[in-house]
Length: 364
Image (cartoon, rainbow, N blue to C red; front, side, top):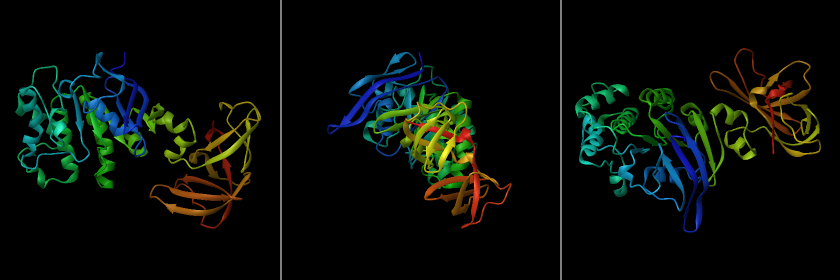
């Protein structure tokens, strides 16, 4: 049985469905990411997992225990909020120690909302001595020696680390992170995208994070669970989800723009507004005459002499390590990226381009 198992969860507000039969599983020690646009049900799922809300139907199992109706403070589940919810009148060490002190009293809360006061966890092993645990958690998140500091004097990234240390201190069974990097500037966010998964894996905690940013999801997670209108529309490793979106909506949400109405004309050939295109031998196509959508991954387009595809460069932007270009191919637009090993075509020029058949993906 998976460590975390959600089965057929349903939830609605004012007769409007928010979750419609959500089912997925997470293995012990795995980092999973709930990815989707606003209103897709991500936050509602977190609140159900934390015990702040109950589903109307379905079950939540954690480590073989049915948590569906278990009170929040008895779950061993920690929810770390986007704004960190640190106590401004406490030092860094006092903030980190707070959960451990509540754990000794039999309950733990962080106090962002009244209901959250009962929301965070008891743990199974006896509580360790508080001071060594606090020091160990601060060292883990790179804040060794920060214990006596006023949290109001910290930078955004330091506050995020304090919140993470406080969340990990009571040794939760499951850690929930709500948009953990959403409040950070770009440089700090990129650095923590590498550090956060390393910290979680070092501790060995099972974690679920929520984001609407696909790049963040791919960088953080072992498994991506993509939500749309309260339903799981795709799940898998970041590589698998990106390489093979299940439909056009998923492709667009992941930032893949090269989508063309297409018709199968042969065993390995499709007809599009770009002309007849050959797909890879490993591609799975429906019967000739079938209609659908063809995705062309941006990595499969490159300038090449005497190639069959001709287009004019109508957009060209420099992104440090690569160029992003857009072509107009007789009214059909293609977007792709190009590295710096060869000069990118100039804006307004016409060139010929080759397509890698492996970059073509048929979507129903």
